[in-house]
Every structure is written in structure tokens, then in C-alpha cells.
Image 1: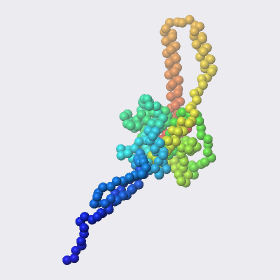
Image 2 (image 1 turned 45 degrees about the vertical axis):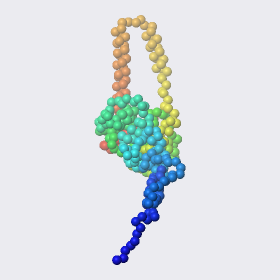
Image 3 (image 1 turned 30 degrees about the vertical axis):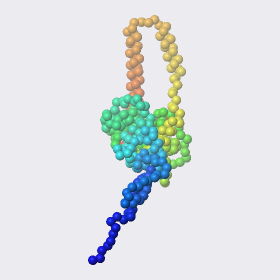
Length: 310
């Protein structure tokens, strides 16, 4: 019977082994099975990626790295950044909080029914609400798990910027081709963000206002936003009215010339002053409430956005 002769121990049999370089490209090398030892020499330094799913060739790579360096973003439990994933309202507000909120902030009373105490985003949402950066929905909810759209992102960023500076961008003569799709309550914020080079359109120059914001876009915008805030002049304090100062000075002078009476009279004046302050506060609250109820909404369930103001 015919047979096939073979060598039980051939000189060598090549096996392929592959590893990944610093850019997650496969690098193949071979070694003989008869002597299963090999050395791989890598020329140059090895610089591992911070996030395995954010390659150096990606357009957003440097922005994601900068945002991570600033402590604005972290990866998931597996270390991935998930650049194309939608970012929720709670996540977006948390990033803003990480960027600009004071470290010693003590949260005020919670104002949203669906933001309980003890959540990872509780302090951030409470801060944003207290500062007037977010207003929530007419039903009293914040909807932390809902995705934030691109036009909503611009409104939140503009709401905070207006709190800290009176500066305005140099207007650029440009209109998005889908300008009519931008909500009226968001249009000024969107174009201000464009004028500040925080946002741009897609390959067709469309803004896509109702598309969800994704994480790589948010990282890009926040990296630019933090640098922008550092360059803008702070809001100037309003000077006191000289007429009020003169009136106050005259009252103090008149009070010092009058003979002092019993302490009960003094207490009565103090009480009256406090009541006056309370009345003023009540008036301000009433005015604030009136403003908030008049804010524009897109439909019954739409978010109540704070109207852009000077």
C-alpha cells in the first residue's frame, strides 16, 4: 500500500502571531515551532491610547484628550470613551459642572421631581437650576436620561456664558441652510456659538438642530468653550446709584442728630426694615415667576427654555 512519508520533527514550521501597536494596528511576526522563542523589538517609544476606541487618526482625538486632561470626561467601566454615543441631559450638565462650578458648592433645595438626592448628577443639576442655566419641563421634571439635542446644547452653553460676561461675539455673515429648522428660542444661542467657533455644520454646512449631541462632539465643544471662557472679560459690577447713596447718607445724618429713644423703637425700625426687605424679595420672586411662565415652549411636553437676555 502506498503511503506518505513525513518528518515528525521538521526543521521549522512558521506560526503567525500578531500584536497591536500604539495605534491599534496589527503587527505580525513569525517564529519557528521547533524553537518556540522569539523577541520583538519595537523601534521608538510606546504611547498607549487613553481610550482604545479613540484613535489618533480621528478628527476629535485631540479634543477628547484635552477634555479628559481637564477632568471633564472619563471612560466607561471598560475604559472606552464611546465617541459616537449620545450624551444625556444629566451627563451634559455634569460636564459643565465639572468645568466651571466651584469645588465647595453646596447644593440648594432640589427643584425637579425626577432628580432625587444621592445620584451622581444631583449636585450638577441642582447647581445648573440654581444658576438659571437649565429650567426643566413644564411638568416639573428635568428628564436626566433624555438625550440633549444640538440646539439645546447651545442654549445651555449660552445661558451660562451670559451669567459671567457681557461680551458678545463678532457676528459672522453666515446662515445655516437648515436655519428654518432651528427653534426660535434657540436661534440666537446657536449663532452665538457659531460666531465663537464652538460649533460648525456637517459636510453640507447643515446644523441639524434636533439631532442628538454625541460624546465626541460634546468633548470638542467643551474643550473650546473652557478656553473661550478664560479669554472673555468678566461681567462688570453695576455701580451703585449716586442718588441712593446721597439719600442714605442724609438719612444716617438725620438719625445721628436725633436723640436716641428706648430700644423698642429701634427694634421696631429694624423689624420694619426687615419687612421691607421681605416685601422686596417677594416682589422679585413674583417678577421671576412671571418671567418663567412666559418662556417660549415648542409644544406641551417641550422643555421650558430660558429666553436669551442681555
